[in-house]
Length: 391
Image (tube, rainbow, N blue to C red; front, side):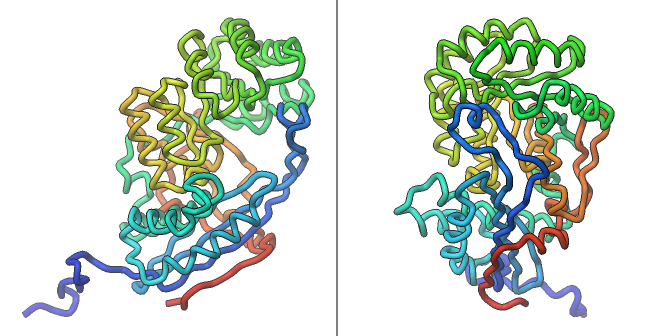
């Protein structure tokens, strides 16, 4: 005679296990930065220095008591708009089976399709989609990387935040020394000064400090035109760079393809794109050597996995942009050896910390994405809305 413990799980009419979403919380949080940040777009007057980052967090709970958390973000303008759209579509999740992540993503994107299926509308979906993947992995008692099928337990990690154009060269060099002491695996610095001679001076000094073999990347933040990118790209060949990032406008697929074909130094781009379709155009045109998707920007983990599959099929390398707390798990599941971008900016938002060891970020053993909101994040919350009832 079987006991209660051995009774089979109740199946939904469709014949699959059901775990309905009963509560959703959406929060708008503003993370202040310690000092204003400037890249090439600031020097040319296109943007103002970055002083804070807006985050939209989604928390989801199901009838069976499972929960997940995810986030999207916006640098400079857009955060309140993304939060407003997230609140609009949040009720669409109630009553849905949390297992049906792809179907839910499609439902949410069509809810706002008259505003487009890229940009703000997809970025507002990302917190929910990421939360559902976090929930799924937690329910399985696995880190998300393991749930997806990890190829490695750690990922090569490079630092960006110490090499901004707003920093004088001597400070950049000090930051590099600190990053090396902390065990970083690569260094990226910003370029894109109005005078390329200034860029050359900075790259020369950094390469000298690092030595000839240490991984070094440069990031032009879409600053150059095609002629400048081609000419200065040839000058940069001498430095054995891991890549040149965003040499051209993010949507100049043809120009990036020409650079990729003509330069020995690999080209990296894609962080500004906000959908699978935009990335597919870039990938199929052979317009980069490294793809740099950003899960919160493309609409979450569901479209990110599509980008990963296409990029791997085309033999491209992966280097996700920002949000290492999410991208560590995704990069660990990429077949080819990827890079992870290290940003310590988000650390005050979470109770947990990631471990950097011998140039690599270790995949945590905690279930799901492995992070929870800190008291500080709650204190920085500007607004919040709840839908449904807590289980």
